[in-house]
Image (cartoon, rainbow, N blue to C red; front, top):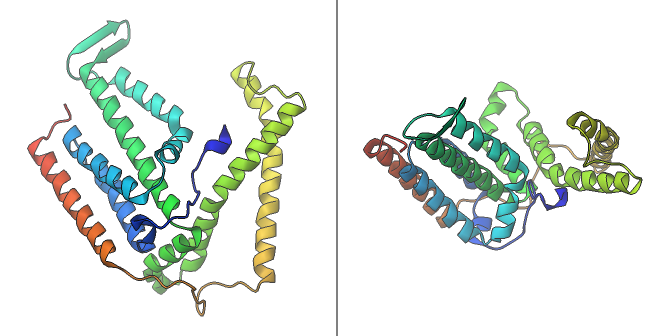
Length: 271
């Protein structure tokens, strides 16, 4: 069900990860995404997975919720794995039939890519799970503040990014409601050819787009009525400050990065 998708949701808590400075969480998340693409073997990838498991444990987010973040890209993961199995012919050939060649290298590459994609999604979701949209907006604005010298409206950019992220769960919920309403009216969304099923989605996407534009207008009108304006002169209820665990998290990530680079040098091959 679409309502099980948890992308963009925030789960209040008092864990160590929740209390970290949002700027540091953004930096560590981007650093994690960069480093995981540097991994060249299962040893370095294992180090990144170990670091991610520690972050999940410290966040106190239920494992079931973490696994739900992978659900929207399940088809992409399976498709990527199949492509790597079929088109990578390194190593020993295990099965061969016409144009299909399955080798140990293809299996290793497929597993490697699947673990990498899942780790990326979980790490990104962990940021939104433990950080409220308001704090993410403030953190993005602070980190992009050097762009102000280029006469860019940093606050507007940060606000647009956060609102888009915030409304993902709302749109998913609205999609589920419209789908249920269309099914109650006799719409058949699960049978027929691919083209027929695509056409059956038109009565869902049209009201979804209309509802989205209406929500956007209502949000803009509400912000205008409350005399909202960003940028200069805007105060914040919560002031962001770096604490001891923020420094510990940064040092830990630097150590993991150094370990990944070292493992890549010692074990230069994937298999």
